[in-house]
Image 1 (spheres, rainbow, N blue to C red):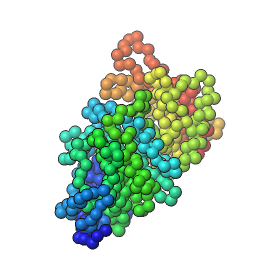
Image 2: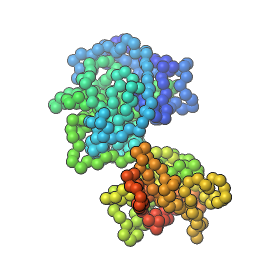
Image 3: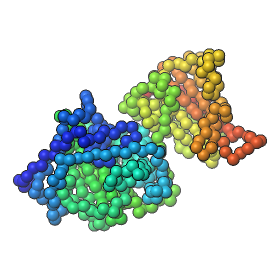
Image 4: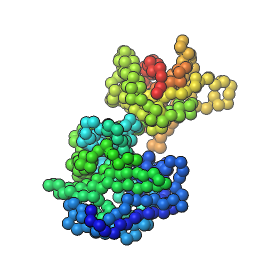
Amino acid sequence: MPEGRRHNAIIDASVIVTIVALGVVAAGLLRSPESAVVEGGSLVDSEPVLFEPVEYPVDIPGCPEVEPPPSDEGDLVMSSSSVESTPSYDDPAYPWLTSGKAGAMSDAVLAALPADVTIVLAAPSQSVTFQPVDDLGDAAPDGFEPSTSARGELARADSSAYASIDVRPSDTGVPACVAGALDARITEPDGTVIDTNDSWYEYGGNRTHFRTTTAYHPDGTQVTANLTGTSAEFPLETSELATVAALPDLRLTVPAPAGASAPRQDCYVSPSEIMSGENGTVADIRAESVEAANAALTNTWESLPGTPPLSRPIGSLVPGSYGSGVCTDLEVVGTDIALSISVSGGAALPVALDPYDPESAYGPVIEFRTLPDGSVVESYDVDIANSPVSEDGTTQLTRSVTVTRPSGVRVSVRSTVDLDRTQYAPLVLPDPLPFDVLDAVAQAPIEQWP
C-alpha cells in the first residue's frame, strides 16, 4: 500500500447499544453472539473500541477510483428495535421470501460449502438456514432494509468462525469504492459485483477479526456473507466466501424449484424438563450421543406394528433452542396429528402430587407408575377442559408420556391434534397417537444424556 494518511477509528463505547433477547442490531459491528460479549465485563463509557487503521490514499484492485473514508468515522451510532411478533415465512409484506425459497437458498449455501467444512451442531436456526424476515414496522430505524439471514458456526481443521449470510432486496445499487470499506472489488461476467474485506476491531485488549464479502446481483439482490472470530484464520478463504455470496440461487428473483420445502424450524425441550435441572448448553451435546438416541428411537418405532408414516424420520433429533436437550417435531402424513419428542439430562425422579394438594386441581390429571429399573413414567390423556386454545379459536388436544430414568435422562413424547373450532354437538373428539405407541417411544433405550 502507498504511504498516506492513517485514520484511527476510535469509537466511544457509550454510543454502542447492546441488544439482548429479541433485539435486532441494525448496524453490523457486533456480528455474532460470541463477538458481542466482552469477557469479564460489559461495555463501559471509559473503554474505547479500536478499529483497524485505514490508509488513504490507496489503490484497491477492481476500483478505478477510491474515495476517502468518512470524515466523521469517529461517530458510530447503533440503533435497535424490538420484534414484537413472531415472524413467519410467506409474509405478504415480503413476497420475495416464501418458505420454499428459504429452503432452496439454505440448500444452495450448504451445497456450496467445501466438503471439509462442517456446521457445528446447533439448533436449526443456528445451522445456516434462512429465517423469516423480522418485521419491525414503524419501529424500523432509518435506512433499515428487511432481510433474511442464515447463521451458524463453521469449522475446518483447527479454525472456526461464526457465519452470517444476509440476503435482501435493495435499490441502492453498487456503492462507490471507499477506503477501509473493502480490500478488493470483482466484477463477474454476469454483472455481479463482489466486494471483499478483511478487518478487525478491538475492545478491552480482545481483538475480533471478520471477513466479509458483499455481492451486488444484477437483479438488485444484495448478499452479505460474513465470518467473525477471535483468530485471523478463517474456515473459508475469501474466494470461497465470495462464491457463497455470488450464488445465483440466492437472487430473490429466482423462484424456488417446484416442491421445495421450508427449512426446518427450531423445536423446544418442554419447560418442565428445563426446570427439573436440565441446565447445560448446546456445547455439551455430543454428536455420537445424538446419533445413538436417534438410532434408539428408530429401532423402537420400526419394532411397533402398524405405525403411521411420518413427515420425517422419527430419529431426527436436533439441539433445542435452549440447554443441552434435543428434540424433534413431526407430523403424521395426511392427518392433523403431530408428534413431538425431546430428550434431556439432569432430571430428578418426579414424585406424584398429593391428590388433596390444591395444586393438583389445576392442569391435566397425571398418572404415575414406576418401572422395574426405577424409572418413573408420567402420562396424561386428552382433557378438553385443560387444552390450550389458539388465537383463532382452535383447541389442541394433547396426549403425553414422559419417562425419567434414575440416571437423570428424561424422554418426553407428546402427540397433539387440533379440534375443529366449527364442530358442535354431538362432539366427537379427534384422537392423537395412542398411548401404547407413545409409551413405547418414551421407553426407547436412551440410558445417558448428553
